[in-house]
Image (cartoon, rainbow, N blue to C red; front, side, top):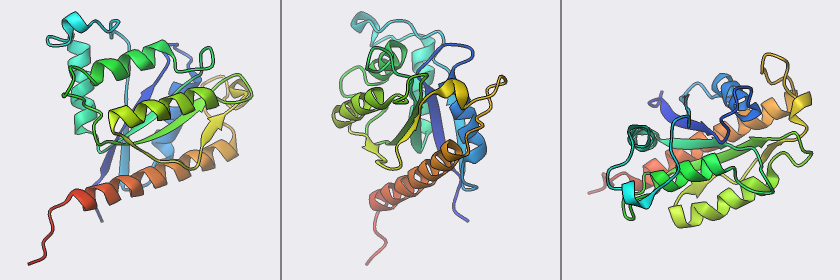
Length: 193
């Protein structure tokens, strides 16, 4: 069996009862056997300040280290005002700076999201895809995992109860793992003589 592929999961919400953090916990259980998902919490990351990018706060250093160690990234985002939450965009900005030292560069990435709205974070996910172009990240395109009306898809303990959402997350993770392995193989030096 291949080595375990390391996925770093990041929720774009600081709320204790975040549906997106709950979705990441569900993803940990739904990950394929050849992958492991670690969740990184964005608590404690200050607002991005270019004056501090060459001497970043400890939490930012840890975030960049975790991103670099990961084989793939899974972002779980809510949608605020038709877009990406500030806390997630802030973390993306920190980890991409200073210019030329982006931890995101070349990483395979997948997105999922949960929202109390019926669109399940669709607009936020599409905005994230735009940032992947500049960040030089390689997104998995399908399936799109948009958990709308999230308040009806999770129980009081934060467990995902919607079977269709579970199937989509499992498929997304399988596709992310396969995508990451294909990128690894393409980057590996050729053994041909």
